Image 1 (spheres, rainbow, N blue to C red):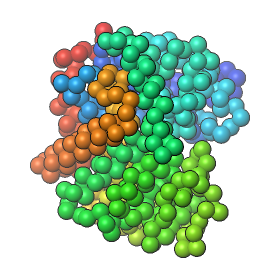
Image 2: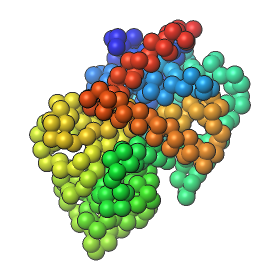
Image 3: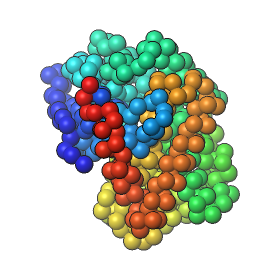
Image 4: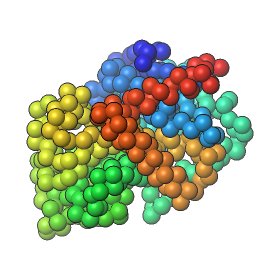
Length: 392
């Protein structure tokens, strides 16, 4: 793949903090990728995420669908989202990036930010929408925007549909892998790192499928129970940042150190919080059979090589956590309506097919799932470029 099309580093004139935008690729002049805010965010991190978005868009390419894949991009701000200066910094960043958001970069919530917060800051920054660059590609902009707004207003069990579809996709990817390996759901134990939007929804869908969630980790540490945690109770007891109120724990639930989730007895680990959490040192503690990347880039490449040598399969982020992005565009372009049942059915069907394709390719090529996903992307990008072009 080529180098990023555009790389931009920005310095806030008020706080001196850094922000970044990387446009990895364009399709018909437009790219897609969320905006994250976390302390320590770097340009290299954002570039890697932008490349991942190019891959996610290509992997969901359907020649017969209304949704036309976009290019990949990503934004990042080096700041703790809980900081008192975070919101003002977000508004100034969006003002600085306004020319790109208006013309070529569609963005939305990512790590540290919610869509409501991005929407509020975008309005204050003078933007029509954080995804307005895609509007010229729509057949009926007014109808499409209403359909997406209606979809964001849908709630299931008191939780927004937009917060659930990503976890539904992660869960379905794992279930597809288990089915290919003929592993029953009952008795399969799972540890989840991060109980925010993605991790919480993943835990819910896996528990409802019959798997046993034996550990969850948040900023306060790991909560574990070998007999299984009450996922719904923990989700009800978390704050806006995914931190669980410990008063909700049952007598059999244990509080363990933060990294204990890596080494609990479980068949599946789901890192669903931050990047770079599995490295060459702590990978030795992992005894699980599968690692499912619900977060972006949680396993370092060198660590993945060592895990592969030990027979541990990493289901990569570019496939596993791509459901949310796809749901946005399926809805906006009109492949699905603002309906939870339709959204979940399309997500399950698409994620299962994509996971099966990746695992079959890995088996045929004798490679890892990640290498197989890269190979699929390498096949599709020239087709997309030939059909739609980079620029309008």
